[in-house]
Length: 329
Image 1 (spheres, rainbow, N blue to C red):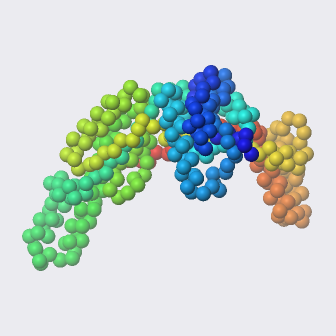
Image 2: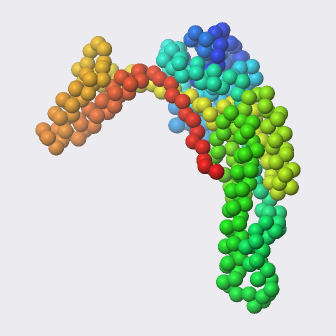
Image 3: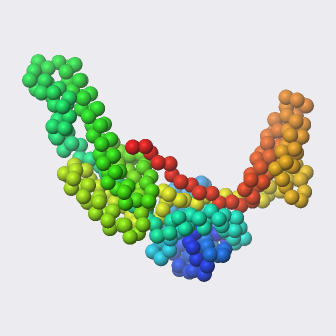
């Protein structure tokens, strides 16, 4: 199948755009329009990314990110989840029409916005050296062990270790609070992510107006000075707004829908009541505990019901929005 389309994201534009042959497989990246919003796509063979080799997936992920970053040089783009493909131009346009209100709203909300990711790691040896002067309990237990010298027992050393562990946890929490307090004042929104390693004390994404990027970088530099080089900061960005608005495109397989419709005997307009009534009738007939139905038949009825229920609620094609959950400080 060669007439499928890979979906990168959506921009607010009522005119067709051509970004050149920068897409997956060297394909031309262009737009398809619905009123004043446009899908950024490239044509190519249909692929299921769950079944591709790792090398191909990584290569296409890099291209996916590159395309979005190129587009965002001129446009505000709301990205689509990596690996999203649709099977025809009609499906692209259907997604735009069905999801127009959501897409238009998110594009307006993200207009002029960028994402900046901030990671902070601490220099543990430096923190440990200065810890006693900031924690009275650690200082007292450290002095006790030092005073006893070789006579210090295991219990005293364990107590010192526990005091240091608790003090480090408190220090980490304090650092995170201080970083968040200093930076969130410049941000429209914040997402906190789990630390990726033991030495990482902060991992967050900040939604900024483009005009605040320099001020935000200055605030990070000031934090670096305030913490006396005990923390190492890394800024990544500007990035597309992955952590705050990632589009998810979903569709109901036309073949599965048609099979479910025939099984339920539904014609014309399909309503919630018609689906529910047909399901109750068929489920009662197919249930293995009532009329001797087979488990396989009951499962088929239930699967068809879920397909038709999704169709009534969302239509054959629909657009969703994924927002990353934020960790608590």
